[in-house]
Image (tube, rainbow, N blue to C red; front, side):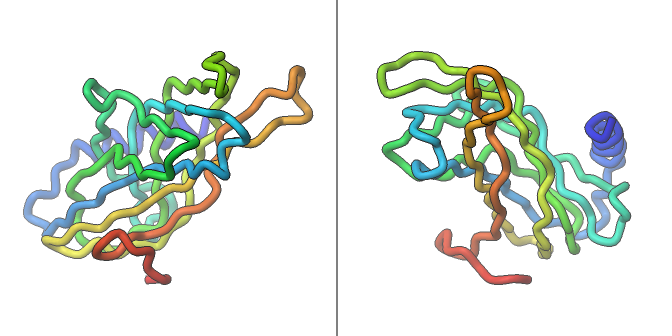
Length: 178
């Protein structure tokens, strides 16, 4: 139910058009470092939609952010040989403070080192990250993911969870709290 309510709010705000308000660009990225992949060789996650929640809105004002989920980008492909970021969404938002970010995942698949497809479920939720989006500036936020085995599930399946989030400053360096 939460996701359904969130989706409706995002669509309404995303279509409201706030062109007279100063805007900044928010880039949203995923990162799945090799040490968070639970021994998997490759993980592919397709972004479906993304949003940022306006601070002080009581959870009701989410702003839609376009995602890049069509070829040639398609899905973010994470490899155990690399810790690269995959920026999967970016969009203009009214300048101001935001409290949460979210990138919804669609299709997820993973492969072992031998190339065998293995079961992987998504459990990616919104995460709190205070952000100040400045007018005419670019703000980049990274959501770090982690793959964990689920002992309570038959067959020991795995899930992808949100582990952390951070803002990147100029040059891609993490920055402290806003």
